[in-house]
Length: 275
Image (cartoon, rainbow, N blue to C red; front, side):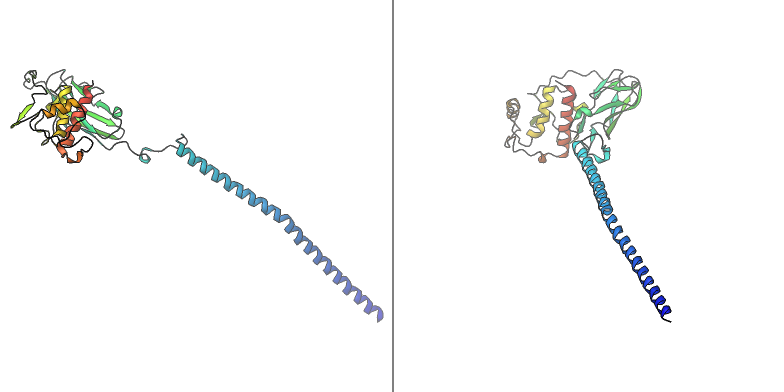
């Protein structure tokens, strides 16, 4: 009986020892796992931070390239601000009645660099145009002349009709700047430049000097004075002129729609004539 009790006690002790050993092993495994996982997590976080940092550096680099204008970022035309909003050829239709007839097409625009404007004829065998908008009749027919810059354009219909009655030869003008066209009891180079839209044919007979006077005549009607002594002396000699507004104080807002368009037309024609 005593031996049985001792054997039973020994078994209980062995079982307890085994349980303690198992618990010790399990506890050791948990501690070891924590020791290993913490550096691994730190390395992962560092890797993630490094990736985020690299991405931020790439974004910053791309931003700098856009700001510095490098070729790696290409902006489409719709993303860039257009230089200018319109090109307006002054004549909708031009008729030429003789082979070799030539006529300048005047235009107005708010494009800052007018050298970007290109002239093109739809059919050069009927009428051709040079880089300054001068149209030359080649053969009978109808074509279109286009002035364009980028996405902006306007066009004029050109009719070459050599079967119509020939126009009389132009008489040489004896009109001088000091003897302008009469208008009532006053004298103007272009008396109706404030009341209708002018065409190129209305100004093509004028000399370069007369064109300059005619253009400034529009401003002189509103009492503007001029810093240029030649202009000022000329308008002082006109009975209708009342120069009361200095050049610096003059506001072009007083001009009506006809006057603004006609001043642009004359200026464009002056540029085409060159020096």
